[in-house]
Picture 1 (cartoon, helix red, strand yellow):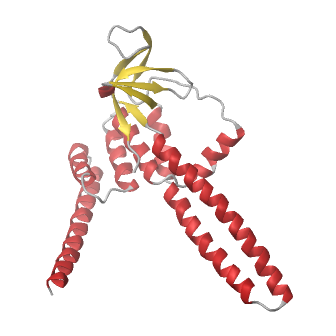
Picture 2 (cartoon, rainbow, N blue to C red):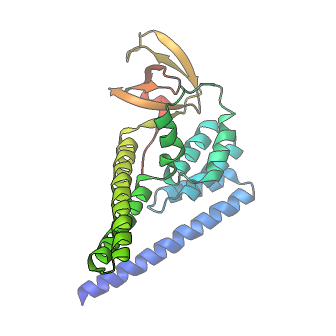
Picture 3 (cartoon, rainbow, N blue to C red):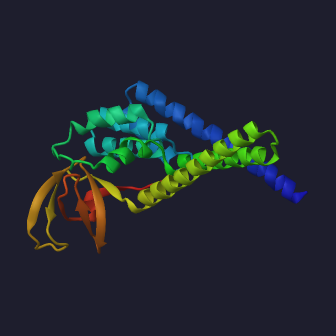
Length: 253
């Protein structure tokens, strides 16, 4: 009986929490429409502390920062929106616009054929989505194999054998893609420069030589950490060291 009461209370609390977060999101959106951007950000940030984060939340938060001409926060939140939903085309388009406000113009290194496939096709979905494809293909391949096993007509048996074999091959390919995307997601650490201007040096020391300068809103890849220093890499291949409080990590979800 006690367990039942606990479950009921837990269920009710989740419903109330969902209603509260929905109300906060609606109120924040209304404040944005009224041009009260600072107040809207407070509510969006309050929602961010809950477990109900979404691509739409970070997209709206980014739009609000953009209205206030906050370059780094707007780019940062557009990136987080895309992390949660790689198919969020609105966030992608607005990110392109927001990047025009940055001072750094960094040309990306040309991608190989496989890298282009990975970027333009495989990364369109998160590893969680690829995992769903794996489950669906597992179910499909199993059903087709059972139909093949219990079929007695030669034509049907041949058909189910071919389709089940194709499904198993697709399953293996999709499983490999899922594993690859998972590793890439966990091993790739990216960040946005939040300081208005920061010097990048050739070593993690204060007296190191300056290599180049970065400005707020620039996206970097973190490849190493020593004390309070991060070694970064730009999309054009340049590397260097900066103090870690100059950047904000784009943590994966």
